[in-house]
Length: 263
Length: 263
Image (cartoon, rainbow over all chains, first blue to last red; front, side, top):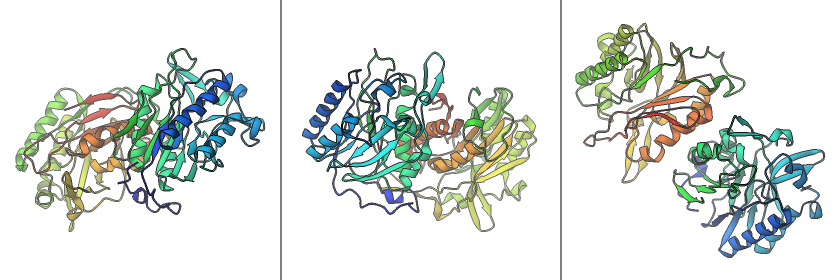
């Protein structure tokens, strides 16, 4: 990523000490994974995609929202994992940790449903090059939407909202994390800008209604308004799924243009 | 303007008591005026455009930024008017007041350079249907830009920045006012959203560099993020001018799409 922009000037004064700017450009991979009801297959498929990305030089890999099972309230409890318990209780994040350490890359692990006590969260885990869990972001803005005849979904039926924004220092810079509908709330991105983030990663699964309406607009607005990079990663579109993701995983830069767009 | 959106839900709690929603749709005119060095001609031309708009049913007329003379630091002091003194000291706003009262319309009078004591401001005046000055917005974010070889301008050489956002209740609803570069600062629009504005009017003169980069993006982002209408009005493009305006006066709605775009 080129760095002609000056994150230290995005908001004055910054709320946190700013990190040193990234010393070099790096490659980011947006793995727009196909997602099936077969969790083992999804994990193997994701591992393979991350390995392929690393083999092509990616130092940061971003996965989609809810990549280990279907996006539905019926599925959320079934595919949920206890991330804090780890190991067999969370095979999806155990894989991410193993592969991050083995390949010495940073992974923003999209999101999976997290079981914590009797609650479920839509949670993104960030792993460092040593395989350690650097941060865990719980989706703050649950996706409760009702556009009759187009898209109706109520995440709050099964999920609990996270309470805090998440900024994490990695080997490729300071990264803010949001999940899907979090991107609709400019305040979250402003906080990340104020805290000196170089990049905001939004795993997301916009749909065939909200995708064409706002997916591109919101990414470009967040990047331009806060003078940082924005990366999004969606599941691949599957017209046969109960919830059809928009795809269009994208990287946008702080001066408005696309860096990369997957269809 | 259709009003399926709910401004009262845009930010909770609102900072001000909310106005009653507009009872009916209304027509807005964006007068993308050509601007010349001849001030008398500019005033006459503007009056004619407003009359034409009103004759076609416009109840709200929006004019461009700096419509009574050229956009340049050399011209600003020459074309400046003492708005508070009024009458002969401010022929541009005297015309707006007269025509608003005569035609019983609301006018967001673009902007002119205001002389106040020994200071100059880039100022927008809003006139009600009785011809009274309802509000005066002084551009808060002066346009100091330097993109070498593309666009260099330093408004702060001659102008002083305004200190306060401006929200005004009119016969066609609650309107927030920004001038040109004010639109780049999302905080101003968020304040207007929080105060229950139905519409933000931005007279603006983006140029051939910043226009294609951000003009459309920022309008759509402000409208979508704050769930209100955004109207912009630029001078007509004049390839022979010292500062070439982008044009593209636009009205956008809260759900992303264009309502109207002038090329």
